[in-house]
Image (tube, rainbow, N blue to C red; front, side, top):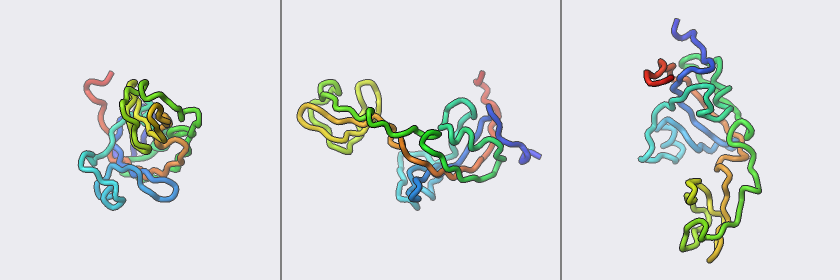
Length: 162
């Protein structure tokens, strides 16, 4: 009766997922065929089930709570509002920063993703010879996410886990 087991807090899981925006545009998936179909396939990415432990904040809250009670092999579509995903978009996280503080000699192109000296991945909105306008919001902030999730399997507790 292994299939009667349901996901609870603290379980280790392997899940497959496909993330979409409300308009149906796919932004991420663990399934190679879906990535190819959506035109987002990347040779650098390994397409395989995603491993995480529930109730440890390794994933967004909407996935964390959405998988609870699901069974191995079960599929579900979750509609996750910004508050349970990557948060609301915050205007104050768009900042004009001197290029010298970003350790840049040339103005970066608008739309380019850069890494700040502090290690944050940010998007350049605008730039000139002395400043760059940077968006520190997560790229999915303010968006409602539609996630098609399948519980691939439960994973026994790793040997090195406490």
